[in-house]
Image 1: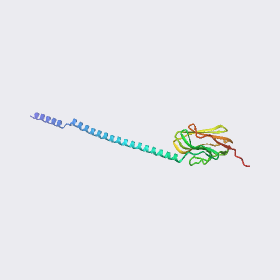
Image 2: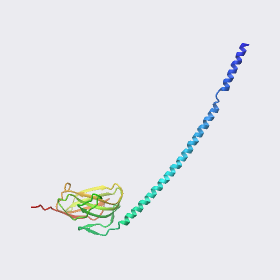
Image 3: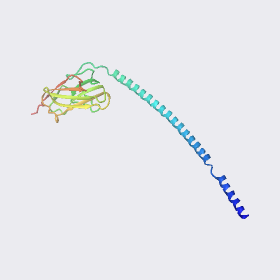
Image 4: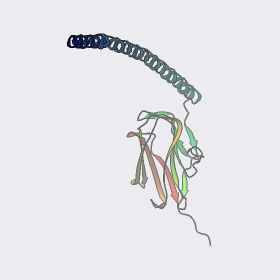
Length: 220
């Protein structure tokens, strides 16, 4: 009788364990449902973010277009305020009229010993210098010039080139001055006839500009 009662007790305990065992399929279904819900939220969030990015890109492209329009208006205003310049003479030096060279627009070109530090433009042009002049500049005023334009200058004495240099414009500019120079430390200022030729991308900015250097008379 005791043995039979023990068997019944073992059977009942086994039944309880079966009843209390975790429902694995149900747990998996619950977890899968949670994963699907989370993935849906992530997908909706990405879709919303894509719409925001597209709206930002559209706004940025509109701003760029508006800025380009403003720049074109400003450039047209500058050109209207700087009309073509008629032929002029500065101390006997012929100054070019408005023209183009190498894709750039130039208003005037000449030689001088007086360059303004404020804007690099000439404080008047000259035709004659002395052998003790500290520096001789050739200066051109550009109405517009593109980035990468190669500016080159050739200095000649009595028909023979004695100096050459070049410079590439780093960025597009408008209404500004470009200058080159020589000094006695690099080129002896011998008395006689001189000329200088300035060009942009191989095209002359103006006709060769002639000038002279005279010996400085010693006192006594």
